[in-house]
Length: 483
Image (tube, rainbow, N blue to C red; front, side):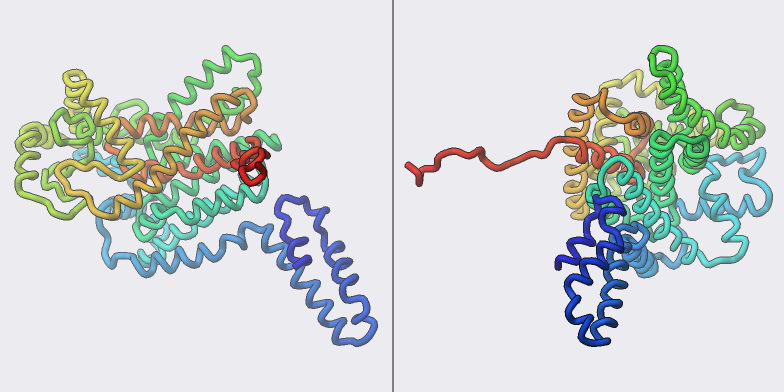
């Protein structure tokens, strides 16, 4: 037990718990037996090897979290649907387009519903005729890598106990499992977010242009994967440029400006392509208009969640759909949507945005309520328009409440200690905050929040490592028994 305790000191530097110390401890314990026989010497050598292996294992995040990788792969194999469905079809279609030398159909039916980040990964795998199940298994790898890089990041700014604890929270997060068997972007996005936080932290901790370039590249590819980050780049770049002009410590603000500019450079080929086929500058995609339309709905009993343009009300939750709900949807939206769908995809996007802006101007309070409902869905996975809720939402209420109250506590601690908070935390919080505020203005779901969970855990782990210990025990006072 003493040997194990000596090995298991995750906060200690390597020279404190060295193999030499392990050998000396073992030698002291087995000194007599070593002098007596050879078998004892063999046991002694095996004990040394095992002790060193234990020490290496508990310090190596690649080994610590390897069992989760195996479980994630098993979970995908067990739960993968035999056919493509939902957004999977669109991602595979875009990948096939890339294989044939184009991304969007042009010019009659331009389709830029999502960025090319994920299809670029799928394209070579599909070209090599790799089964979809094997491609989906990459989601297990993405989540595993997100956990490992979260651990490595927290180890840079906190201690290894904190790094282990908060990385395990990500490893055990139930919402992360729910999207693993699906060929969606969330697992890849979570990995890119975790990787970005890691290289931003290295950039400020160790310096060096290579970390800055890698951080910018990762953020750029994240933007190509989730095009909402394109608008995040614009807002954050404007904010950092203002800080660069107004603040004294300009070197700190110059780095994020460089990272954001590199990220923009990564997205420029895609933006040049969208300009070529649409004639619009900084055109990231045509999916935002419809999402904003549903988010801005002024009607009672509609909470901003996305509905199919066919108005069939077949989205989650799928239980207990009624004809009355479909009739209400058609009564409220059929005329507008029928008119908009007569146009091409780019015009549809513009028309949906025009109607949405009109809804917001006419019913600003309803828009504010829908905005609140969107954040509720990100945290708790409800409410949904014209739908009964199911029991699975109870789990979302528990996890969402923990995230909510932990984040509120984090906001208070960060505000009180703002001058002492390291800049990597401030920078990733800026990007995450802008992303969440923009996500709230569209039809939002738990997966919009889940992808930035590595940032929240990095932030809260850093705070946990730097606050003073809270002692919940009473101060020493005389008890009744002493009277």
